View 1 (tube, helix red, strand yellow):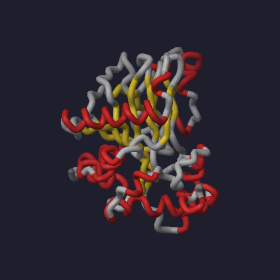
View 2 (tube, rainbow, N blue to C red):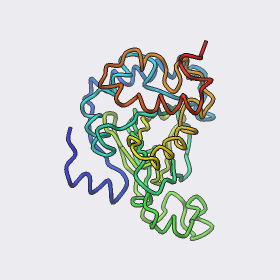
View 3 (cartoon, rainbow, N blue to C red):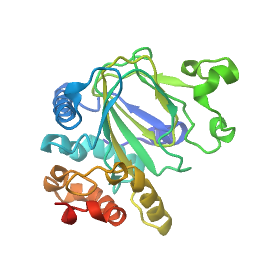
View 4 (cartoon, helix red, strand yellow):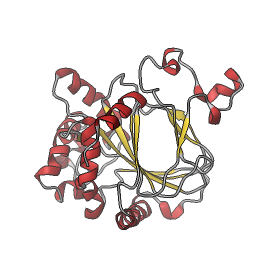
Length: 273
């Protein structure tokens, strides 16, 4: 897919983009199967009782079929349209969510450096856990950021519950729909059940300047396997992601691998026993 000028303007202005049915029903069925296998085998999903979130890193990296999501033409067109065709793939997380998640951004970069591509694997409405967003809150001049408002404390501050914070929206989705948003965008979820399935792909733009390299080092020092003290056996990625990669996929892996190995040399592929 190729993003239109209107879609790019929308993302730049509001900080997110919803693409309906980017994946077909057959494709998303296979993706859900792969997600379930991965969370059951790599995250203790079999023991999930709904009392708290079950989370694991690198959700698309455990089987060749899931790794191939990074090769999907529509995913490449979507993320590449936002961050540039030479974007860096920097893993992600998979979840059985339980209950609400409060308002938060995933970063405070003050610019479009990183974006999250979110896969919601169950039908979600505003009352059953659909992602909520505050459009425009990725921008440094947005009032939430300028006034340093604690959105989760809006009832005490303004007499308005966080679920009804002025300017927020609920993005209702069905499996196959994809939401991509700037890491700086405030988001939340309310009213979800005890096993809400969702996983993400976190990507950044390619570092080409000393300033970008500094950002990349800061990003990967926390948003990575090493940042979570996870031993994958292959550095930032699980081996399957690398071993099944062609040169086109490696274009999105190589720089994160190099930077991660610099930050966490004890976790580099050649040093992990």
